[in-house]
Length: 361
Image (cartoon, rainbow, N blue to C red; front, side, top):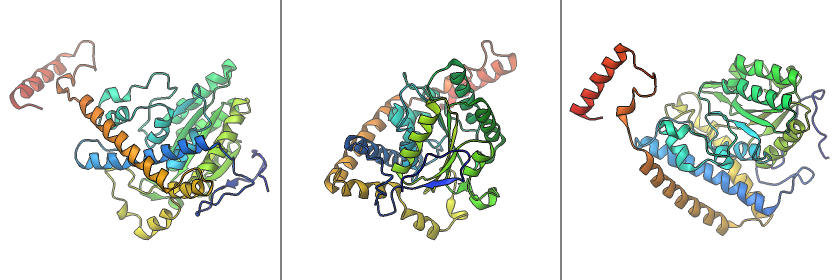
């Protein structure tokens, strides 16, 4: 039966449209146009292949530590699909799939994760808050932005995503409360990938679902299969429409699994089993979506292979652009801290520059 719009007075609902074999619940399928479905598929594949390329580059010393998002592509693309260009996005550090969809260039993201400060510059025309590395610190900023939009009577919305671990931070709780009280047009997207770094879900919280936390603050909340891109798109659309019509925030718990390490400095084999990973591999969001697309005759195996080849070439060219831009400038290390360096730092700078002249970087 068709699902009723969710509301704060209801028990937390769960939404899934595609099963693990890619079969859709016809009563819930949003029946998106074929061209939109193809764009979504390409964006998900690009997100994964960029993830794989960055891991290789990191292992080769060309990239800094970063947070892979393999297995979470459906959340990234489905959640931002309903946003307008003038809406705002406040990303966490595992969000580059959504950032690509919103207008980031691949080489710009590579610069960011390689540690070049110019990589953090936001693209022109992209309404996005700076990416946050500190757990949960970007959520209050998103709510403040939403409150400003509400005060001015605008109809823009703010989407902010964070992990299950961040949901246990005080910053997030305070943000939920302010958003609920002041009717901020904010979509809180909690990506429950089962681990807060190495702490499993059941050891970090006493609730059965994180969506309950939204209900506790008086916010309409929904639990979604985060490996189902159609369910993510449908849930995000409903939340966006709610916020845009000045009805306040929504909390979405997207249930997924982090298929790779927390960051490339992490070894997940220490705290989870290979058998657990294999169980979640059967829920792979891209494989599930491709089965659906083939059943709808939107794509076939030849189309999928062509998309893969095209993306590999796109990533190769982006890597070359990144390499041309990734010029180390060690002599600038002291240049952006003070207008006039204090004497002790000026002395350190002189010693540092003298060592560079003698030994190189």
